[in-house]
Image 1: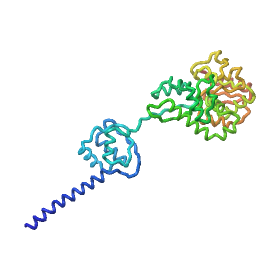
Image 2 (image 1 turned 30 degrees about the vertical axis):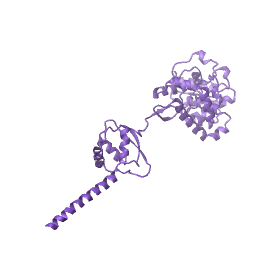
Image 3 (image 1 turned 120 degrees about the vertical axis):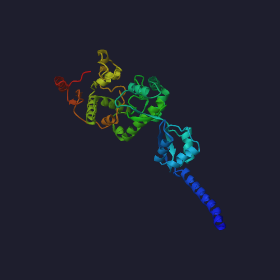
Image 4 (image 1 turned 30 degrees about the horizontal axis):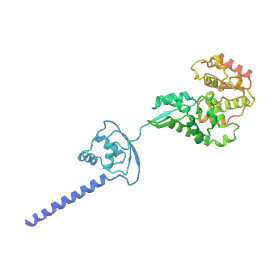
Length: 358
């Protein structure tokens, strides 16, 4: 009996020690980082999430090994007041480090906004979108465009910009050079940062086509100006390439470009807003290609911010024998060799109720 009791006295502590060691090993394993390497994951914790919800999100993102152990760990360590938000966490964080981060709100991923700038829109539209979508207002945009020191900084930074955009008759210095696209910005983005991303995109497009630009008979400013007109006059790439050919034919023949879209821009009236007055149609504004004084000339600058396709259409235009074109209300474009053919086309479209009227 004494021998059996002696064994019990020693066996029980040994079992307890083994259990304690096992528990320590289990705790050690489950509190260690999931990875020794730096591997970041983004996880979103909604406001009002329960501890169970949060632990499940951590498990789904492979930041913890055991959900039940983690819940017990949270309760034993009296962890509470975990923040909601989008977190950027690293898989090399220990369990303790994870909950310190979730508790104090560090590493909350900075909130961002997505802004889409549509193709073929002018600077007034861009200013309006910035005013609606960001902490900036429209005046911030126009003030920055009038800051000559800022514009000169950009001229020094981007090879495709030059002193031409500082001409006092140009409405907005960067008109035409802000590439339309969908961009992601931080919530408190500045106008400079918005312009920077758009100009970087323009840089990418023009860098890709630098060989064609260097072979062209036109300066970058003239190419962008032509592209802005082509953007506003045609929809398909094929039509735009032919429209570019028409404009170039007229320039080479020292003819008026006679583009309605330039006349609207000159008057600072958006297409469809209202009909133009005769005084606006006949104005000598340097943007107005209907003006007698501007015969054989491009507008002084771009009239919108063209798409990549419109720029390509100018750089790789279709040589043709046309000098006139017109689009019907379905945006189908008709090309004519002379004015007589052009007028006949218009007459036919009107008879078919396809003539577009504002």
